[in-house]
Length: 373
Image (cartoon, rainbow, N blue to C red; front, side, top):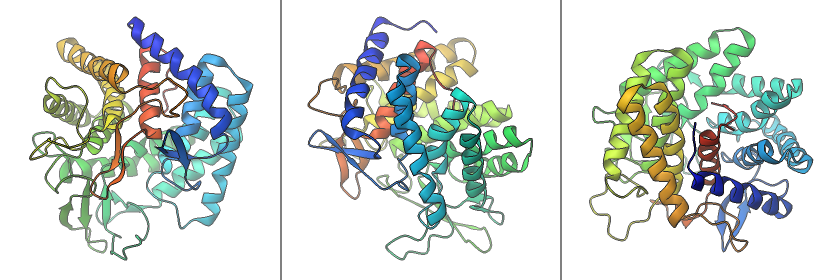
């Protein structure tokens, strides 16, 4: 894939910065930036895989033994979350795809393969066969009964199940992924391409109860990051299954996302706000969508493919020009992310997952992607 010069420049600047920031961040799990410095979270936090993922992407350019050793150390630290069990959640795909699966792809490390297969088994264990969905989270601090909750983010984690089926030649992992994806098609993705964040089911009967706003503005709005998860996740599911329903869904979501942007390539935190005045952007949603759009462009022929590729480029160029940070006074690569606006958490900051999908999208245009999804 021919990349514009600004893609190459942003890639090289990002890799150089990661080499520098790795010396301070070290073997921790950064999440969001505060006053220019990434704050770390416990190893069980859902974003624990994105920093090692950034290290492995950078390693494809530098082949630095220091970055390799650091990524391996972080993978080792994730073992404690398996033994503690209760903090685990639906995002184990994010955690082990970008650590163990990445290392296995690069080096054929058998211990990494075993770790990823164990994580896939734990993810499969969250499947509710009555409702055909993967349960989100564990027990929440609010004491809300969320045993029947499922969320759009899980679409991205299905790739770990498809990988496990391929590795073990056991279709059960893939069966679970497909049944969950079908539930998302039916209950989350709306006719216009907008998506719910949370859908609540009766955990005993599997019957749908209601959609919940979650991190979006309202139950029937369009949380930008969730829309990006769905766009990308449906494209992934099509690549693994070749079922045209998933490709059609990814296209419908992508068309909605790009139409909602209009002439302004960086999304607001929700794509269906009653008013955008004073509302923050979410560059992380833009980076996720851009990476998904690149894949979608390769799956769709003709003018539609060109449309999605151009959309990805437009988003990335706007982020490079207005929201990237390659200087030393900010550890994040991409500014102006929004973590959880309804709870006013991590608003207008750099977010580690925004950084990861930014670099991943650049890598795809340069032909250096790790193809982890």
